[in-house]
Amino acid sequence: MRKIIQRIIFILIIISIIKFIYLHENYFTRPFDPKYFGELYSNSQYVIGERSVGGIGDDGLYAFAGYYYLFQGGDVSAVNFEHPPLGKYLIGISILIFNNQNVINVIYYLFILFLTYKIGQILIKDNMWSMLSVAVIALDPLIQDNLIRSLLDLPFSLFFVASVYFYILGLKKPKYLFLSNLFLGMTFSVRFFPSIIFIYGYLLFIIFIKYRGYLKTYIKSSLLIPVIYLVSHLSFFIYHPSFVEFLRHKKWMLSWFTGTPAITGNIWRNIFTGKYISSTGKLLSNAYWIPVIPILTFMSIIPRKMFMKQKYVELGVIYGVVIINLIYVTFLTNGIQKFIMPIYPFIVIIAVNNLLYFYSIISSCRKTLLKK
Image (cartoon, rainbow, N blue to C red; front, side, top):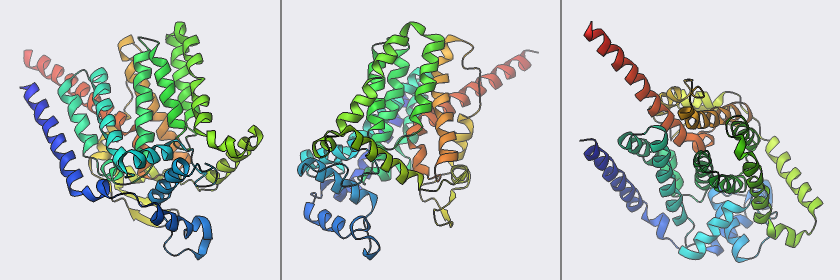
């Protein structure tokens, strides 16, 4: 019966994906128009400032940047310096292969679902409930909306989830730690990601405390993070052959982000009410909010004795990553829902795992009472 339910959930997920792509076919089949995006950027707020009429959205900006980097050999510091260039290069690759900037999003999306299932198998240890976790991610309005926009959140989320997944595998086979830090480097090369310092420190701490024999391997594999970051900036060094200039560029990027005001606690208002305060101080409704989000989030942050036994270490890894990211989003961002996208698969998995855990306790107590 459980296998039948699992297959039904899987079929419903596939139907939902096909239906979404069919209803938004134009976003995946419309050829990329470099002239249109070039003119849009040239007349945007990034070039002519306040004189711009209408401006350009992030999806248009990243699409143009990806084309500019890959097809015109552009300097990555000339267009959209605010974020590292890897995600925009990948948009360029999508344009190169599919003549469309959005098709690659489907690949990210499918791999996120696959990794959610694999992590669910490790932590929940139940294929049916793991598949249900996948369904929650697959049907999430924000994640689906990212399918039709050339944004950085899907690749950022995929690489981060992959990094944590291979870290968990690396706790048994240390060769996977190289893949973990490979994907962590790719994550860092897609979007500005300051919480990487605390997350990396946490993962290193677990290795040091419980897997000290892997410490040398983990530190050695960590060199992949700066290497990938520097390689993704190769065109910068072609136009500016100076490491000092590169550091100035990164300082410039950092100063741009510190200029964006953080709204402490805004993410929790967003999670539990579906409303948030915008950068202009207005209270707005979150179009992607669904009632299940506060329930899942609440269930995911309930602490458990995850480090008391070896079999709970994997859960402790995921839980710690979620808490660190939530602290970062709470105090150092403006609290938009997209900032929890990278940890949302983990939130869902932990919530489902906790629900099953508490259900087993209730069920056990009930059986004890019935025996009496």
